Image (tube, rainbow, N blue to C red):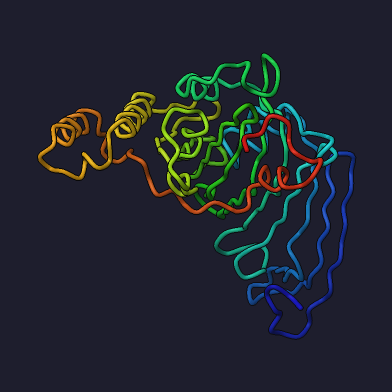
Length: 305
């Protein structure tokens, strides 16, 4: 059974493995030449890859699929033997892909250097270093399932990728957008789920909490590790949520109330068109830190409950 079924005679079964000190790959499928004489591989299952993570690999490889992963310092060896696991396929199960090759990174715990971007995120959310799990130079994170579409031409597309910077409480971030694999030019969205603001006591938690697709969203752009964010926009959005949370909802429902009038004025001052609390793409659930917390004796230290 093939993901993309060969439709002609003359195909040959292909089963192969490659292993080195830092990389292992396994594939199975069928090879066949197309009308142009080029060989095509029909996959029986996605190609499975395990790769050891080094700072050099992070800069050369991981930065091409996720801007925050350029500063990877290592993998939690107790949870994955220091490896990142990938699966590679295409929309029709045939390689080389005509449209895009899809790479899926399995959930993994990592150590990230405190890049300038992360430091500014913590500063904007008023998260002290002592609240985060790690050292003075790095933090521990859970990276959720991450999917990247590698296009033959043009920028690669990063689907929504969630990560939790572990601490008390943890800081949940999400990222999606496009990355040029050669120049590392990035045009993406950095989102902070509203549930993170509630965990940090920046905003009030509702009776049922905020859904995972509600987040503050700001544009993330730049090249390599020189990434910029509109921090003023983020600050305005947070300020607006804080003000809204301080007003009695029943008073807001009365158009003639002074609170309703004042809120209208405040919104006019703080509103940031195009960057207000957004409906983010749906996440890949369940999050790995939630699964770990639900497993007896396997709760990641310092994670947010």
